[in-house]
Amino acid sequence: MRLMLLAAGLLFCTGAAGQIGLAISDEEMLGPWRQATALVGTIAVAPAPQALQALDETLAELQAQLENTAIHIVARPEFAYDAAQWSVTLSGHVAQAGEALDAVLAAPAVPDRAAAERVHDSVRHLRDVLASRAPFERDVLQTLGSGSKNAIQALSRRWWTVSEYVEALRKAAAGSGR
Image (cartoon, rainbow, N blue to C red; front, side, top):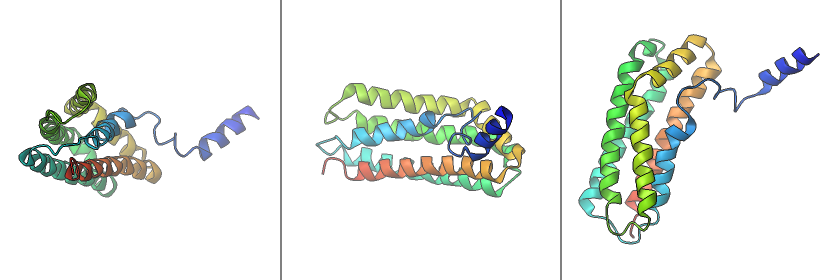
């Protein structure tokens, strides 16, 4: 009886099931962009236009790379062979976006220096996780290797969601100080 209840519970778990065993957590993926969006939204005086332009450009590149990641996970089963190198490429885009974000958050108009430091640290952590290759590669190999369409779509959806958070940061930065 207990075994049947456990099996039924596992079959009907949807939200948590997609998260079980993944090496990169939602907080690591989404946290930097959520924190940055909240902080950028508090800037009362517009940062330097050059800094905002550089941020927008790097975030646009990162967003495109994240969307490509989501598409590759779903559409290319051979993506598993490219996952380690893809992770390094993603890390580079995150690093560039982090540098541009640091330039915007260095403006005197940023009201919370501690929050700016937390954003810097969380972006750097995501960059380091991706640069290490193993966590991203593990998530991709494990998911694609499972052959589960639901798991593959869930992993793809996670990366697409990150791209949406990056887009929200772009919008917040475009409206900052206005």
